[in-house]
Image (cartoon, rainbow, N blue to C red; front, side, top):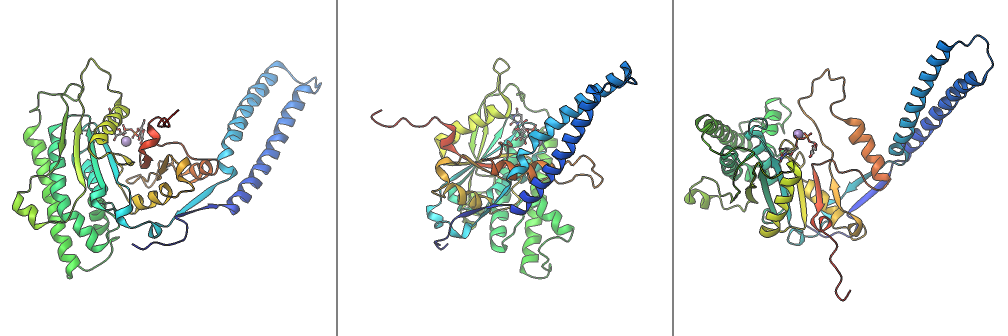
Amino acid sequence: MEHSSGPLNLCHVLTKSIIINRTHMLVHATALSALIYYRASFFFSESKSRDRATTLACLTMFLAELGLSFLWLLSQAFRWRPVRRTAFPKRLPEDKELPPIDVFVCTADPDKEPTVDVMNTVVSAMALDYPPEKLHVYLSDDGGSTLTLHGTREAHDFARWWLPFCKRYGIKTRCPKAFFKEEEDGEGIGMSSENEFGSEKKIVKEKYELFKERVNEYRKRHRGDSSHTSRDHPPTIEVVRGNVPDEVMQAHQDPMPKLIYVSREKRPSHHHHFKAGALNVLLRVSGVMSNSPYILVLDCDMYCNDPSSARQAMCFHLDPRLSPSLMLVQFPQMFHNISENDIYDSKLRPYFWTGWYGMDGLKGPVLSGTCFYIKRESLYRKPVQEGK
Ligand SMILES: O=c1ccn([C@@H]2O[C@H](COP(=O)(O)OP(=O)(O)O[C@H]3O[C@H](CO)[C@@H](O)[C@H](O)[C@H]3O)[C@@H](O)[C@H]2O)c(=O)[nH]1
Ligand SMILES: [Mn+2]
């Protein structure tokens, strides 16, 4: 990668949106003022036709209107000064100068969060376009399930095929499940199955099917085997090496990101604090094992849908102008499998595509709990300066 003198990122103020938003606010505020004036004049007028029932009805409506107007007023902050940001990953320093990243994936229940899907998220994180020796993926299993541990080993084996395949063909969708679905739906990169890509895709698909089969087989065979429960189990930490024998491993010498399975100790007598407790344990475990200065947090059903996200995040974290006051770089969540007839906006578009741009313009969005690259240092107290 070449150095370049341009900035690593740009912040664009969305002038057109600002003009439209503020004009709309003005019109809306004028209409509201007229309404409030109309209601108020009703109460101050000395009309004899006003009986108690009419007054009560008008008062109730007026209070409701005042309440809604207040809510409207508060939400206008999000539309006041929206901004967008562009990152220039090509301007980042060389790979060897990039900082390491720890990825935290949390799962809690192999019945509610199917193991194959969780592993798809894990594999998509391992396949990020980032130097593999600088990427460490930690999977926290709050269920303490042997199925998840077994699935992690199987995922590691499958990643040996998947990672080189993605790298060689510049695959954009690095979650295997999503990639094969796109290929089936004809939305893939459209190369014929006759060529080299096609034949390799076929092999990788077979490996993926085998991986799924083995995980599901294990689930069937070992159901109810364990004496532990998700609420009462000892700790387990394993640097996952997979099930592949050494000879086969030597044949695939491509370096891979480290994959670490962590299941913290849980006892009924101690509160476990759900995901927050799991993240705290991952912070401590990773602090001893890799201690990377940046951390990506993912829910187990939030796969990485853009392999360049790590480099994009670094365009902000490594920017000397921004970095001292920057805690995290957050990506919006995207939802699939939502009904075509959805009337509840389950994709949360106003939140991610309006609210966030607005909040960023007012000094930063809220933390949404997943899909963010956070600076480890920002989670600890500021180091005390020497001599003070
Ligand atoms: O005891 C627990 C409970 C949950 N989780 C994990 O936490 C994540 C989020 O939990 P989920 O039940 O899926 O919550 P959602 O409502 O889908 O998630 C949103 O809301 C959560 C807080 O309520 C945030 O933590 C999430 O990041 C945010 O996406 C999942 O990966 C779980 O496996 C644990 O690790 N341990
Ligand atoms: Mn969830």
